[in-house]
Length: 296
Ligand SMILES: Nc1ncnc2c1ncn2[C@@H]1O[C@H](COP(=O)(O)OP(=O)(O)OP(=O)(O)O)[C@@H](O)[C@H]1O
Ligand SMILES: [Mg+2]
Image (cartoon, rainbow, N blue to C red; front, side):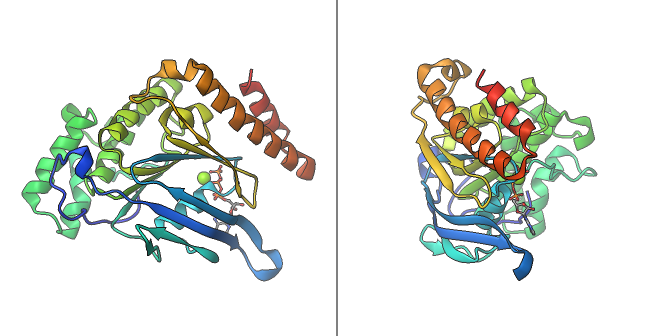
């Protein structure tokens, strides 16, 4: 989480799902390159898509294709070279209080307890009455299952608990859009599954518009309403797959023929992309093999 934010106006603590402010985000012909003219590297090419209000859009793509760059553009940390990104019709020109980003790296301050980490941002900005901050922090920490652990320091929390504390830290700002960049990467398999389930419940409760980047296809299918599959760099949209699985999501759904179909469709594209880059560079053998194996 990087950006200080202010709460969304007129949203009281515990506001029911239907009343939560939500963003529609439109990316229109967005392109982005890095580097000087002679060594310019095109990362994103002509991406047009919509993050629909109240939907979770998951993004998967080959390693290094430009997913984090996409996150940085929507967050407003970077600007597109061409094209534009609109949030509820208004052009994004920089970071804003309406968006929160949760990265893979921990954003918790090690010298503060979980509770103090959650109240730190709002109290620093002073844009929310302290009593309300306190009440909301306690409510959110309970909700993410850290009620008993709120006075522990990050070092004394497990990886999964740290991620949940970060979710509370992001949620207290009531963003219109939650952006997550591989938030569960690095957690062990069991904790990761628990986090996916837990996070889905949280999302289903108030359906904040969410952009969720992951390298795990099953994770993407489990959480997503729509799955965007990206190509190699310069990255473009290869496919958008509607994930028509009921909610609340359960892991059993991943064994359904529908889920298998989505997985197969996404993996075929990623496999093709891996082959292309293998043919180009000759050094992607591990990647090709990894994706082939996962199709079992
Ligand atoms: N600020 C920057 N300056 C120069 N090049 C950059 C910058 N940010 C990203 N890049 C380049 O853009 C490309 C895409 O990087 P990015 O981090 O967006 O990919 P990714 O899909 O998130 O990768 P990963 O799968 O490793 O998370 C990389 O080649 C990277 O070196
Ligand atoms: Mg990345």
